[in-house]
Image (cartoon, rainbow, N blue to C red):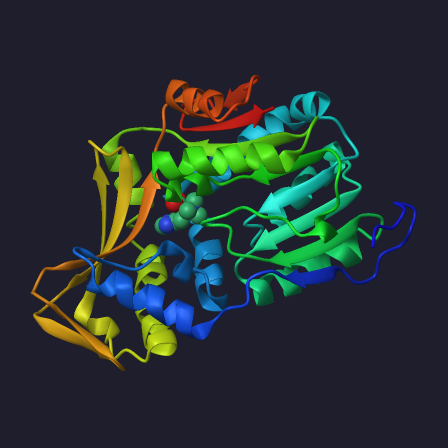
Length: 324
Ligand code: AVJ
């Protein structure tokens, strides 16, 4: 159902794409825990509490990506809109609180705003209040896990789309997965469409590690929240006190890694399985890849984008690319 942009929208439309199959989630978690090293996919970081903790992270002075990206948009959004075109369908991938996209509504003047996020309940709240503030934009909320395949429902509308993937969320993928994702994004943007994407850049290790291990320990709470999710989803018996948050820059891999490190030898038990961890053994919970401008440009070209203008900040800490 597509409505003319003159219509006054009062309630967003919500579409649930993935049906959170409890058995499949348990299976995914158990497989990760039984791996070597043990791991938990980073998408499990974002339940209602995790999404709020992430929002708190973005307020930390040590966590530079969000505010640096904001300065780039503040300085160059008009130029970006001139290239991307106005009146598009703006598709926000991993919308969260929808704030980043909302800040661009004024310059991009989207006809339709499609917010996609894995945390549906969080999206429902954020999008409903946004719809009240922008009754002239048709809004659609899509609950979807696009970490393996990017598919948009018919409710997202056809035509020229501007895909929006800010915050360096692309960093959660390995470079190989990122290439695959970018190819799918190119296909999903449609002929005449574009991708507006934020990418975190390589910088001194001390700056990177402080951003992922802040003295207020908000990032530690964000990471440790995964143990609550293991307990809730898998019926696991993990104790938060038994683990320590570890964040380190793997220079060879050009990525920040987050881990949960066992403070003592222990065994995690859940219905149908168990995993022994030695003292100091880690559960790998997240990769956050850092690119160079040239490296990311190459990736976009490999994905089939012919035009890749980009903008960066004074320190070259972060970059925003418009690819089409
Ligand atoms: C949302 C994946 C971009 O990698 O910086 C923040 C997540 N992890 N602090 C990032 C995160 C720890 C964030 N992304």
